[in-house]
Length: 249
Image 1 (cartoon, rainbow, N blue to C red):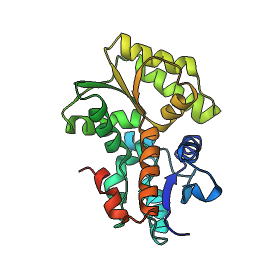
Image 2 (tube, rainbow, N blue to C red):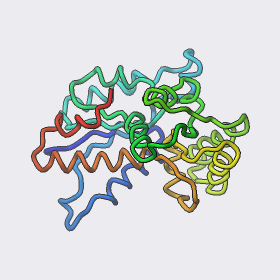
Image 3 (cartoon, rainbow, N blue to C red):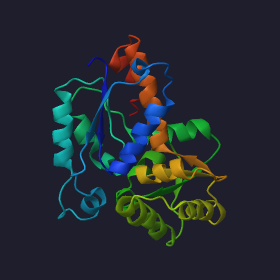
């Protein structure tokens, strides 16, 4: 197969399925051959990311991802994409394993925020406890000189329920709960824009988009970027050159 990209997924599987569905349905096609070439590594056995980030005595998820990246690197994909926000805890270590471009979903999403909302000085953030605990998105947002609003102590339990109890454990999206979280972030904490810092939250946005709030959806954004880059490379652009505009430092 010529000109393909590798998806390091399975964290979780339903969220990865959402990403794949987005790229398949958003690319413009007139025949089978117009779809994108990709290899999906749906590694559902990767240990829980939040558990390790909060407690290093828990299984370290780096080694599973290391095996996945090194295995795919042997096939020489044009670029890597990893549709899991919390797994970016090990982004630098994973990207260093290969010279193949490795897109940073979180960084791309934060830059999209400042491009689309240049006058906003802060952004609301809802994410896994692991991402919040280790400041993964917070650091990226501060890097572009914006402030972060996490909301009050009632927010995280609601977010955790939506991500873990509903989507990861039951495979369902509680649209009412999702909308309630967005409403509280907007009304109670003054967030004009809310960043969905977990791909399960991106799934919630896909399934329950009927709300009036401005969101930055990293999975939706990385899906569009994946399509853009794959088509440029298919049309003859060098992969490193195509990816260069999104390799933010």
